[in-house]
Length: 404
Image 1: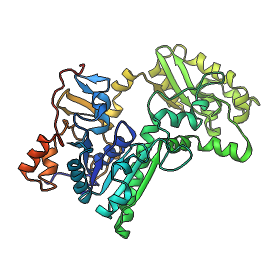
Image 2: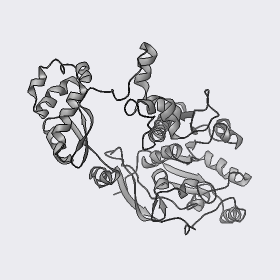
Image 3: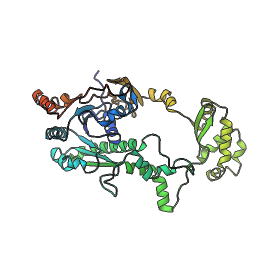
Image 4: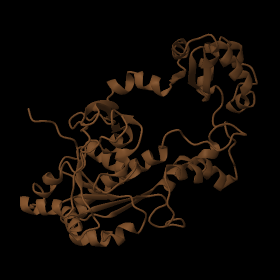
């Protein structure tokens, strides 16, 4: 039986991305079966050397670049630019996340790409976008969390601004960029032409605060922190940790009363509506805390699940890593690794019935130089050797100084 291929089999992506949002978009396309060629500087992209480490391998790097090919090349040199131009001619997508304008200075703006290949789709990922009032400013994930208001609606009143503990803006921007790429590939089937995509971190931040911004813009309603849902909706302490309970909707209330052993609260005017429960939330929350104080997390989850109330663990990273869910669902998978021996990477988030996700290993720096140049671009072995000697391309296997 032939090996199953991902749904993007036959699509070739040039990945000029660095750090997270851009490379994660390309990684998503690789998981979907695209051939992704990571174009990195001589010595490798800087995030190859970012902590934390798993036996000399960067846990940071592998999450965004596993499953890709590596072409290590100096794009400051004309021979290096010639390689990229030829690669554009045989590719479907070029992704970059330099500061706006940089790619034009490098000589690879969309007008140039279009001349080389009218079918090419250019994906631009940046902090504030290719146009707009802050176009020329640089930024990373936190700017999307702060400028959009996320940090000021997270937590409770009186707290300082609070950011998420993981880069939610980078991750979601990568998904926005990947969705746009898929749509552009689909549209190209009818038009025959590629186009340019502009995704940015700031826009993503606003996609998270769209409801409160709409309310404020239209009616002047400014939310108070910690009041997003009627109780019981939040985290509650147990004997050995914390549990999330989410039961703010009206049709949940009778289930909560049964779980608390307080059927009389169904007729209590303090709790008959979401609004009233919000006003008397501390009474509800105290009853929840009293009930769960001597329960284990497992017992509390079982109790509320029995009453058809949403309950889930508030895991530490250690507990999340030990949970069977991501491993059985293949959201996390373990793959071979040239530095770590084996390492866990993000895996399959789609579970196609015929065209499964493709979870590959992480490449060495320049591991696929010859594969790309001779196998794809028809360079001769002598021409490749000349590029090595001129330090236009390179590979790097010296990892002795990396902590591990």
